[in-house]
Structures are given as C-alpha cells and as structure tokens.
Length: 331
Image 1 (tube, rainbow, N blue to C red):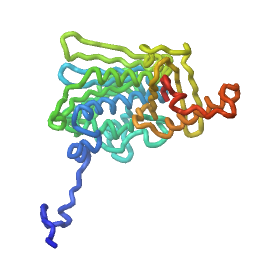
Image 2 (image 1 turned 180 degrees about the horizontal axis):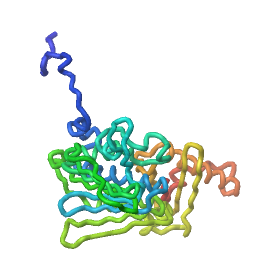
Image 3 (image 1 turned 180 degrees about the vertical axis):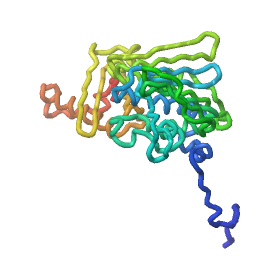
Image 4 (image 1 turned 90 degrees about the vertical axis):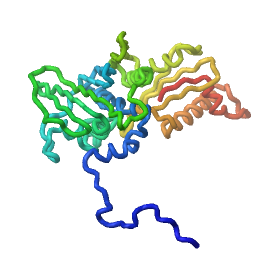
C-alpha cells in the first residue's frame, strides 16, 4: 500500500494555530455568516439590518422603517425605535452601540429581557454587516441626543460622538458593501428588496415600511402598511384567484411558550399555497408548525364532515391533499 501524499506543510506546531481577532473571521470566511458572497448574500446584509428594526416593532417600540438604496451604492435603514443603547457596556468598556457593531454574539436578543420575540439576532447580524462593508455609519437618537460613529472594514474610524440635542428616538444605519468581498456584484435588486419588505409588513401588522430607490434619475418609492396583517397577506396572494368564501378565516392563540396566528381562504383552484414563518423568518422547508397545521386541518375537516353526516361510517376519511385543494394559508 502506498503512502498518502502530503499536500500541506508537514509541520503542525502551536504556531500553526490561527486566532482570528474581532470580525476578522467574518471577512475571512463570509459565507459562514451570510450563506454566500453572491447576490443572495449581498441582499442578506439588508435583511440583517431591517430585522433589527422589525424586532423593535414586534416589541412595540417602532412604527416606521425606511429603507433607501442610495445613488452611490450604499443602503440606509432608519427606524423610529428606541435607538441602540449608547452607554458604556460593562463587559467591553466601550459604548454599547460600538460593541454591537464590532462584536459577534453581542446584542439584546439572546434572552427575553429586551426582546420577547425576534427574527434576527441583534449584534450577530449587524456586526457581520459592518465587517463586510467598506464603511458603515450609524446614527442613534437616544436619551435626548443624536449620537454618531463611523466604521471602516468593521473597525471604528473614530469614537462615538455626541452631536446635538434631539427629541425623537431611533437608529439609522448606512453601509456600503465591500466589492472585494462581493466580487460578483454589489448591485441590489429593487424587486427583491420590495418583495421582502412587503412580506415583512404583512407579518408585522400595522408597521409602516417605506422603500426608496435613488439610484436612477427618476427616484422610485413605495410604502407598505397592512392593518390586517396576515389576513391582508392571504388577500394579496389570492388577488388573481377566485375565492369560494369571501371572508378570510383567522385564528390566533397565545400559549406559554409560543404564539400562533393562521389566516386561510379556499379558492376555486386546484393547487395549494401554504407559507409558514417562525419569528417572521420564512421557513421555506416547512417545519413542525406547518406539519401540525396540515394534520390538524385534515382532522378537523373530517370530524366536522362526520358530525354533520357528510361522511358516513362506511366512507373513508378525506385525504389531506383533497382538503387542501385550492387552499391559501399563511402560518
């Protein structure tokens, strides 16, 4: 038996162990954090920042989010939430906002103290965005003042500055994706961003999300706000279909460990459309919540049919596929 070829340096000593400090690991292996460095990963930067604003809305502290694609290729996300804290963080000795933008696994979403429900992980996401951008500029209005700080390639370019008194509250983050990381493209798709923002507005009832594209001579803007939440989502999905009952069925239950909301409506079509989410994140591959819905729906329809005599003792139960024919549902 021949010996295997050695393709790497045979030396394996203590000096062979690399320690990547701060956000260096993110820049070295970006796909580990955002999935890819192609268009999907590029747009993921926007989702990470917007998720933080939506989490503020879900916690009851934010009513409006503005997302702007800037003419110079940057992205600006602004909300009217509480603003990222600016006081000194006891573990790092730095302002909390600086810590959040420069430290992985730093944020208010890892326990239920600041956020009971969250889609993104505040600190993980925003620090990754900072690491993968040539420049990031953050403005925070909190405690009666406007604060600002700039970062370059993930590192602070200066200290947090107390700019001027201001009454409102909120956070504004502007970033420019690094073309050396995103070699394929740094051009955002307005259609992709619009579709995602619309979806987030449906899932966060009452939240106003405004989109603005300043990259062309004619500026394009659009606003999303849905008082009906996922009921309006089902109506939107069925806009070109023929519902067989006018009112969208809506069910909601708050338990000790989870809250469940379901909106559904049958149409005259033959295909089913079921969209499921967990903490505002689209669960494309389903999950126990979606499987539970499918099973419970089939059981409920069969029980009802037998109670009303629509199915006799000799009749077989309806199959799940038959029950869901023409169904549009958001879970």
